[in-house]
Structures are given as structure tokens and as C-alpha cells.
Length: 127
Image (cartoon, rainbow, N blue to C red; front, side):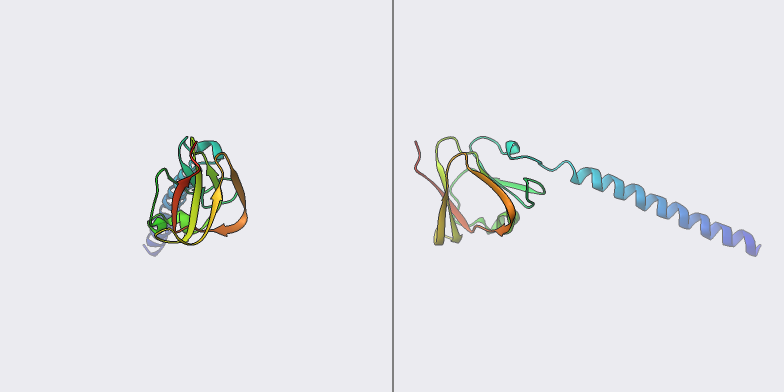
């Protein structure tokens, strides 16, 4: 009887481990479905990706925003693309359009190891 109980415990441990491995495989598949190229940014939007080379989580904005801190990826991204239709994108280092600022021209994109953040934005130089 002692031998039977030991086998039952071992068998249930293997079944549990198998279930965890199957669950992990499903999660990995979902992570690969994230946008993987700048072309995934819709026309008319400014998009950022958490990883370099347009990988990881993507977030996008199309209008003027006084507070981008509600968008997690805008607080630490490595890739960006201004896919605006007719305007350049002006970013600010602080909320309410304050602090340091810069302009990303329409059609401009970039990626690298530097981690960037933005706290607010507007659209400028519209044609």
C-alpha cells in the first residue's frame, strides 16, 4: 500500500507540471502577437513601443493630450513613429504642455536602447 500511495503522489505531480508547461506555452504565443514593425502604427497616429525595433507593447495617440501618464508605455519606450497625416508631433517632458520639448516630424521614426518618456503632446506645423 505504501508503494501505491507514493506512485499516486508522483503521478499527480507530473500531471500538474504538464499543465503548467502547457499554460506557459499559450502565454508565450500571445506575447508574440504584439506589433513587430513601425508599419503597424495606424495612419494619423503617433505610436510608441516598449522595446527597440518596434517590439513589445505598442500605445498610440491621435490628438492633443495634456497628460500622457495614463498611458504606461509613454513612460518608458524605445521605439516611436509619427505616422501623422499632415502634422508634426510636439512632445513635452511634463504634463500640461510644460517642460522640455521637441518635435518629431511627420513620417519620422526611430528605435534604440535609450528609454524615452513623454508627459504631454500637441500637433504642430499642420499642412
